[in-house]
Amino acid sequence: ALVAWAYGRKASTTTPRATEIFTFGPVVTADQFVKVVERAYKEQRLLTAGVASFDALSTSVARAVKLLACCLMLIILLEIYEVPTSAWLVPLGTGIITVALLAGSITSDFFESFYYAYITRPYDIGDRVLLSSPGSDPTMASLVVKNVFLVRTEFLNIAGQSLL
Image 1: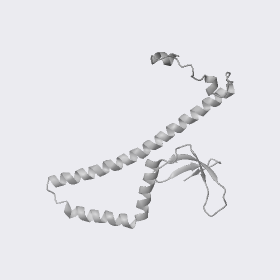
Image 2: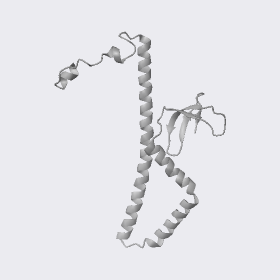
Image 3: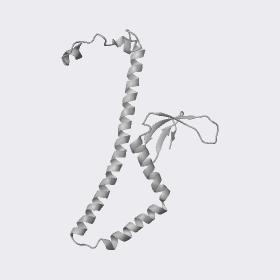
Image 4: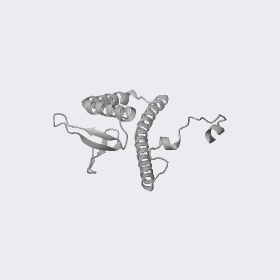
């Protein structure tokens, strides 16, 4: 009724009561209250860790973009002052392309993992992931995501051991 009054509307008679939404019933025991508060605290911690992980990824991408922009600005500045940049830019570019081609799988893995971890975001910190090894028995290993990095993900197994 207070919300309806605040928005200038009539109170709805179909609004569900709190006892219909929560499964505890009209009386909440101390144990049920503690479980709800613990669950809310755990969700808050996982949400905070997920935001921190995403911020770390964003920071690394921002640094790479800033470095690229600084290099481009340096080249433009050298061209403005008529410094012959082609004498060193062509061999440098050729060397960079050569190294990228020699380490082709590493470069492609990096960009694939960047896209997968940064844009797709298949899982977040605190999510439970089931993994099995191909070609082995069909048992699944239950892992919990501890941290998401740009190229790898850190998991916790049931025993509390950290796996990369």
